[in-house]
Length: 248
Image 1 (cartoon, helix red, strand yellow):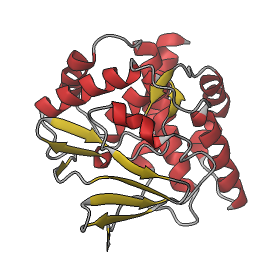
Image 2: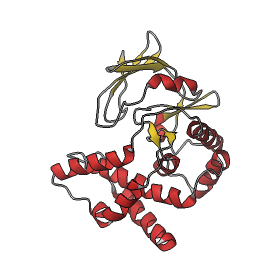
Image 3: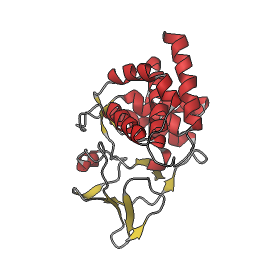
């Protein structure tokens, strides 16, 4: 098997060329790998699961175009929008947990143990806690919608890396995809034309704040930050000020 480099920060992943499979050797944190991966075989845009146990996951290998902000087309945005509304309306029974609140709690504990400070989180701690307490948990959500978890092939955008999937709030998935993909306003319009209007602008704004705050916390939960948190700090401030001006 060939080790796949630069595939996340948690698990080891391989290409089993003899069987043409993607293999993930699982490494656990407090909230990943809770899902029964085989349930994903009902989704046409998830790579088919062929084996899953406590140690590893094997899925079909998708040999396609790995998406990034530089090669993302409007047609792909429409496909992703349609896939996400399909997921959110699917009634699939994902693990039940307020995973986002748990992730905040665990990351804050790690940051504290490292004697680090995150000023933007301290500034808005009470407001963030209020947001987290009111997160909906009624829809199946992916919860990790980076473009590098998507592969385009034959007019399908395959969504991979479901290890954080749980019942959750569709606004978190939407905000996560928009923010992590750095969509422009025009691209957002294309995306929502396909997804539809089954969302609330107020809650989308709240989850833009949550998503960027969560990324800031994840970055700072490492002894050495894997990359800069500057852009995400600025977004938390920007969206929080927009929220306070509109809704407070």
